[in-house]
Image 1 (spheres, each protein chain N blue to C red):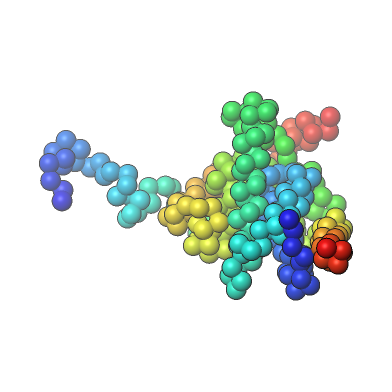
Image 2: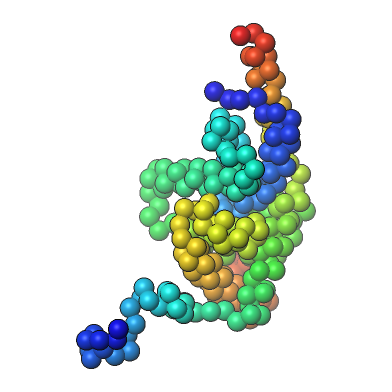
Length: 182
Length: 74
């Protein structure tokens, strides 16, 4: 049963789409899958509107739904593709979007190699603009856990990206290009 | 507080108490942290700038129509 989205709410949901998509794309590493996640999130939000407390942060609520959908789907997929070490997920990189700059590719690849709990913590706090407290609520864990995941995510990214020597990513990039061109 | 365990494991601090005080994880220097943050936001902003696919507008419009026509017929 889906309630009629009143115009204000419809606009609010639509306004939330760009940030939901950015989160979903960065989290899943795939645009198609991300759009499905966003669509499922909107549908689920509409059918659970009675659970939303008016006056609280709609975006945080939507992010919570999307994050839970992502994890339940991820668990399902993991069973399907038998991918215990996540190497399959690691290979599924976002194809460059039209207009997006090539140098984001290295960053996205590195981001995809993080454990998903670290990735989501970093995305929520470092990119989506949530506080540590909000991120903890979204992920259903303690604030300290979020802080530690964010720290580990940053350190790991710095290692993967060779932050001290950003230019030195050439060979890796060429290998990936060769692999992806097939 | 530092009682009996001290003799054997003089310098080992239980992990839980480490978490409370100092993080046991390596901390990035400010500069690297800043660079990672900048790249992350740049990548994210790029995604945020992308136009919203029509499917989402269509979806919300459709639901609105469906709900209002269902309201009339029942």
